[in-house]
Image (cartoon, rainbow, N blue to C red; front, side, top):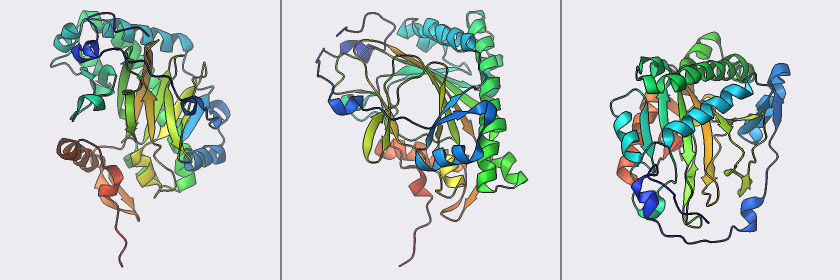
Amino acid sequence: MTSPPDNSYPPLFRQIQPNPIPRTSEDEISLHIPVIDLESLDDDALAAACRDYGLIRLENHGIPSDLSMKLQNETARLLSLSFEEKESRFHGSPVSYFWGTPAMRSLRSVNWVEGLHIPMDQLRSDVDSSFSSFRSLGAEYGEHMARIARKKSFDAVARDLKLDSSQLGSYLDESHGILRVYRYPLCPDVGNYFGMDTHTDSSVWSILNQDSVGGLQILHGNQWLHVPPVPGSIIVNVGDMLQAISNDKYKSVQHRVLANGDKERMSLCYFAFPREGGVIKSSNYRPFTYQDFNAQVQQDVKDFGFKVGLERFRIKSQG
């Protein structure tokens, strides 16, 4: 097992002592999730996957393979800068650098991850010349993400959920998506840390493009199962907003990323959200906007160190 090699890692990651613990066999059980061909989209199959798994593998999605590779390479270049340079370079920029865990309560709770948070509508406003290649690639990639999130995936589930035209525009706004690019550094103590601990996403959709290293797991049937990378495919998962929109017909999937002591992992993840101020109405939840939801999540993380999520808005049964 290799120790963190250089000063590009956050200082905390460089301080942890090696403590190799073998993986249990349970960690290696793989789940064969539904595969959807986006060129010949089957609405019923997509709806069934959202209902039964909360996760879909998309093929024939139209994203050029060289675009994904170039964007991952640019991500690797930026995140290989020294920790201090990353904090300085992205301070005050529309693109922000992050690492670890928000509101970390203990050393053992830190997520072994770092990355860049990119609001797609602000990406082009960053004028730093050293960022121009990433900006250009990210903008092109974001256009593909918006197409997949809206014109393909969401329009299909909207038919299943019988949403009207006003809800179509309010419940997903592809012009304000968020791209996050992640690096999961080498971890010398994989038995005590996760790349990213158990969570659900607050989005409508999350669209993941991962490298060949793997490590993603989802909770399915009360068991953690591995979702291995398949070249040329992307993963789409149901987020909290879509669970509420669907009145719990679809489930926001709990997932996590295992830490790795042998290889760094890189991934690109696009998050699609409702329109700002758009009110989500559901018989299981009191009316709320994404901004209401996000403010509550931030307050809960500050107060308790974790996200409570949709349960804050669920209508409690009487009696």
